[in-house]
Length: 263
Ligand code: 13P
Image 1: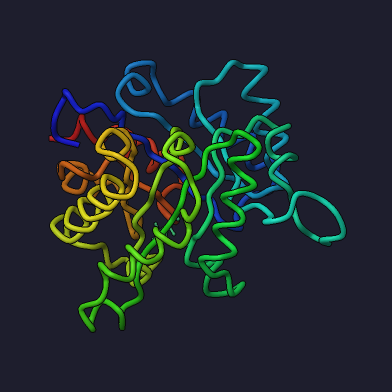
Image 2: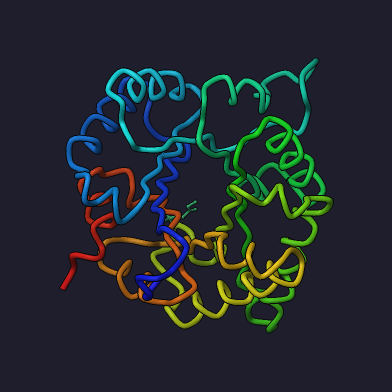
């Protein structure tokens, strides 16, 4: 995101995972909103992904205080409605006016056995409800060590976005999250992040169009914190970060959002 002429506005997304109840969510968003200035939001979009039980509280606060912070869900059902105990549909999320829906996170893939077909069905539901998918992809350490990281990520993209039309890519965001960098403190090198984000963009260009490739934001995720965000954001094809652990402290998330001010 080095060029000021870039058609893509950077975005910092905080994935809370299974942290914070709805009362803590309200306190967090108030603190974040108080800290984020109009100048920050002119430069960078800011989004939080709270657990489902917090979404209504965050929505109410956002609407009451006219906050410009975006919010989204961490997952969605692949089904429209019906007897799917414990599931949350895309139309329920649309009613809450979420700004995006994360799908394909490696923790969903690993602990809930989600594969590209299921993620593709979820994206179908997201698009049917005019919501924006935030699609996470990334390789495990053995795949990287075998030299197959790029082909693995491209196969994930192609499976998860099967049947998606060029027009439907309007609000799409892709996040490259190497599994070995998530929650480990082991961040990908800026060069590795750049190489994969560029490969994702090139794939978007060949699968959809050069305009889609130019407009779609590609984020990096995996042990991002204030001390390493700037070198990642200095890469031309890294348009933002999907932040886990470090976003749970609003002060640290603010420092990440303010990466352009770092010396
Ligand atoms: P960490 O920032 O804790 O490594 O998590 C990254 C992540 O999984 C965001 O979705």
